[in-house]
Image 1 (spheres, rainbow, N blue to C red):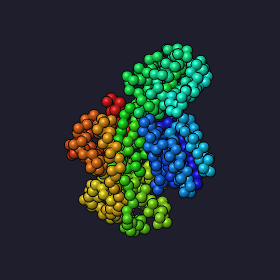
Image 2: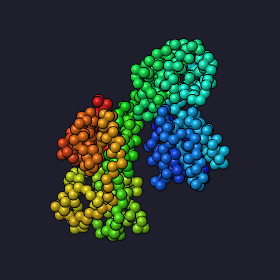
Image 3: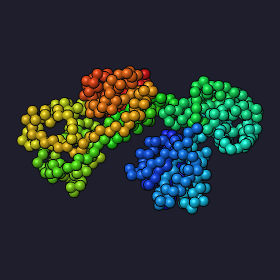
Image 4: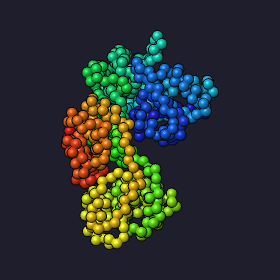
Length: 504
């Protein structure tokens, strides 16, 4: 048994430490806070017990004493417990209280530091907390002291005269008093000050004003917690150094409908460009219950002259069966290989294989045309490995041209409605910028979750299709395709979406 007090970081999931990630991946129980990014739970084991105990002002899912008891109880069951806390557990995170409770109960524990919002939020807003020409020290201050205190423990005069950059957290409710106390203690009313709301996340907003005007400006712009308050001369550097909010897709929300197994590249790219990415996979990839036909074909690959792959998933599942049967790449030695596009070709390259044919346009129609131009001998059959349900264009046109084609599924796609409510919620709030579709099947499956009629009520949402087949699926549903790249690749789709949203 053991409890790990993990710092989840300030909100950007990529700022989680490697040690914290590894502990999440092995923990039996994960107890997480409101300010810990929910996407971090993707690192948890599939069978882990996930418990939410978030606390925000006026709304505590579980009071602190009960959280302490929960950690102790789960550990006494002999489990490894990961306590995931926003920011750093020991910087205004009450991690010290939890550690003392564990110590008193005789429960072994470790604290794993996280990046605190006190330093990360200003940094993402372009505010360095120290600068050799401006200030050489930083003071971190809670703006919300313990309720039972009858008198503040803060020495306002010392803070005002310290010459430090002052960073307040959890202080929005008391912002007028903070401003008044600092000025009454001698800090100049014109001192540069800033607010950073939900720093490091796609929802980040920031505001700069003289100290005397900050409370009024904050109320006017509807700033609330969680916001970091920064007071000091370093705030004057914000406009020059504000890199995060200047990214091309900052402030945009993009839905990715691709299966999670395929979505990592597009999710990472949109995130790096500054957008909030909502993963709404309409399908999930699953193995088949029976592989006898495919296994028989793999054992007799020498009977075929060409092997066709129409997706990276097809390569992955084919390779699983190949290795399970005790074979390796040498089994494909007599075959010519065809990949429908660069993503599929990349999947083959990971196994040391280079396709003999990639069509000029990455659709089945173009593949048939380019293959027929090779004038391949028709005396030996072709093998097509693909999803259980797929378009029949490729095998039908090859057969119509005189080829024998064996079509064998190696995986299937199943519906996934796990993010339906989130997407509907964001649509109703008019908080979506774009929905991306990487295949016609994702269009059809998405429209089972969110009807076309609903989308037509939201003309502000741009619909992006990877190519003409996918665009046609949108049009058949009575929807406009606003974005379609010239090249039918994920890379081109990302570029097209970026260019379009930069203008909308």
